[in-house]
Image: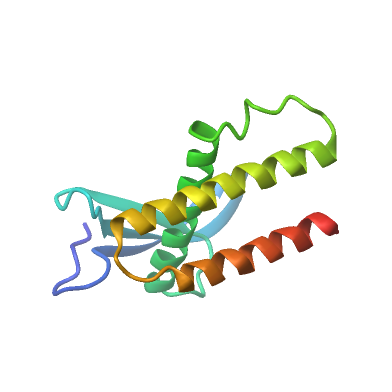
Length: 139
């Protein structure tokens, strides 16, 4: 029933729908975008916040996807879940900090190998993240 937007839009299609669950109705918006890895394929993003635009939905999803990739890498490759068997809150916090530090070091090494740009900006971003994480741990 609905057709793709014409022109070079950031999204293919946007549809407002209502979702029914447990006798309640909830408004939602489905935004269809092209899959960057396969141009013939598309992805459907859904949002229940009707006040934000389609571009904002796409931007938020992109940021959340980066977080998902980060946690997947930490769990799969850096042993976030399997390496520490302690039930102590302090030990779990320390282990998480070590795993995140491993990830940051690997990210810096990967960037240094793939990109000829200076890593000063990346260093300051990691430094801010580190201080934020330390502040979080000290609470």
